Amino acid sequence: MIKIKSAVEIDKIRKSCEIVAETLKLLKRHIQPGVTTIELDKIAYDFIIKKGAIPAFLGYRGYPATICVAINEIVVHGIPDNGKLKEGDIIGVDMGVKFNGYYGDAAITVGVGEISKKAKEIMDITERALYKGIKKCFEGNHLSDISHAIQTNAEENGFSVVRRFVGHGIGTELHEEPSILNYGPPNMGPVLKNGMVFAIEPMVNQGTHEVEVLDDKWTVVTKDRKLSAHFEHTVAITENGPLILTQIEILKNK
Ligand code: MF3
Ligand code: CO
Image (cartoon, rainbow, N blue to C red; front, top):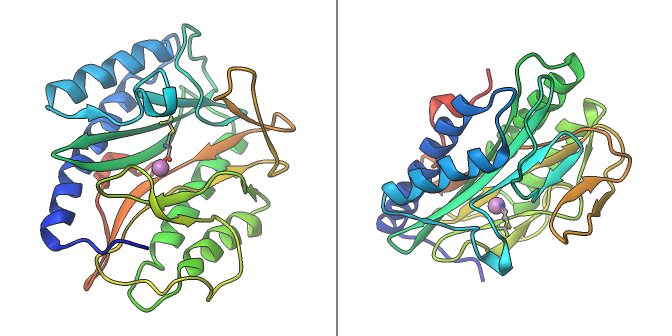
């Protein structure tokens, strides 16, 4: 069952989402060559606690950190460590918080210093695919219209979308129904209704869409070790159309 949220509940989700967006904005400022992902994790943790919120990923199914990081060929769920970011890397940062009983979840991919044209392109296309998906969040559309828009946009630009991980409903749980695939035909699945809240999160690869999980049981990498990018927003479907709850200006890469 896909839960329909009241305006009051959406407002609570919005508060969590604002903390997520502010944390990502803060992290973005710290993403520089030489910084370690453990340092980024600590910055995020301290900020979230200062805001009176709870890091949503820490302890989730045993996940050991506040943020998930995904450098270059890492798709999602990389664990922060002592490795330093290098000029030319791209790093995905995915994070969620719980505040007053409601969750918010978002991810961005950011370039470290000067990055290659190809790296810039995969980031731009992934973010654009996310926005194309968000634009389908109107009552009366079908769930897979979101999926189809994402896939079409990524593939017409020569990239592939990851099949193994998907977006999700969000609210009093981090992961609620439905699963939101980033691929598929249009016009399938449940009809969208005002009051649904979704975390939409395309993961886009430069080469094959296939992925592998490393021995740490968390880190997901591309099978061919080519680049991958990830963007995510929490979005409410409202009578005025899609409301991007994790949006603040800085989340846009351009
Ligand atoms: N960000 C992921 C999602 O959007 C969740 C990360 S799983 C965790 O669904 F274990 F790292 F928390
Ligand atoms: Co998510």
